[in-house]
Image (cartoon, rainbow, N blue to C red; front, side, top):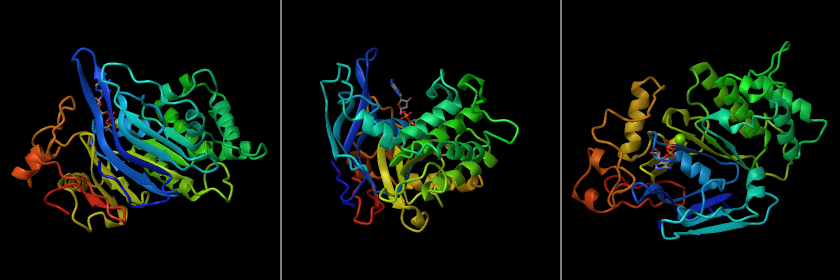
Length: 356
Ligand SMILES: Nc1ncnc2c1ncn2[C@@H]1O[C@H](COP(=O)(O)OP(=O)(O)O)[C@@H](O)[C@H]1O
Ligand SMILES: [Mg+2]
């Protein structure tokens, strides 16, 4: 285990978290992520970056209790210090592999539903098909404790911010099936904001949209963070924290405080966004940055064909460095011994034998 001791007053702390799914056909476990340790402080925005298939979505879902215990989450712990709620601490154990995991303990879901919000990838299926968008927004705002008189005001603000309402027409009366993919995507983000959560997990909220909309969405995430968009927050509550998941490292500037880099289900690096390009980075992070620059800041890093080799197959994850096969700096040691991610008191670290 590689504990992250860099912040004492974390809103969320994950230590040595691992998750898998048992595949009956193969008779083996597929590992989503392994031994992941990190924290998110109150009012902190943390980016999670890595190419497709690296386990970002599963890690994000696990924070909301949407992965089961057992395989699912089979090792490590999660601790929450949410506002106006008792401390919540969970630890996970492997149940032998073949049994399906148990649903996470009762008592957790109500707190997480309200205090931890999710903007999912693949928006349409995540919206309630039986309720109009207006009803869903209204109910969410009410649940978040938004005063009744403010609900129509905040609704209007969110709908117009996301280009979902103009003076002549609003999508508030429509059901999800009557929305375009782009509208449904923006509704999902608006609902995430409407929840007024302590922590918002936003999974690829800028993926699959063209660049003017991408810029708009990023701008709104910044506004939400500052508290100028979304329901009013009581002064006693800290500003919202976020886990912002993306495969585009160039989106991190101006939005996130720190960046975590994930590859093959492991965190390879954590750093302050202000230090992007200013400190020795993991060779994988450097490739992500180069690719983003080559594409003029608009890189689609679903995979990185420029680097020979492929991401390890997660039925049999390597016990050495997971990036060694594709790394130009890899040596004998990297192919034998896994470099640990040791996060320093400033909240930064690189899991690499060659870069510290
Ligand atoms: N039920 C499953 N069985 C086996 N592999 C799965 C299953 N569900 C997801 N995966 C795989 O898990 C990996 C991690 O997925 P995901 O968290 O969605 O990654 P990311 O969000 O970084 O693209 C992917 O390679 C995906 O194909
Ligand atoms: Mg994903």
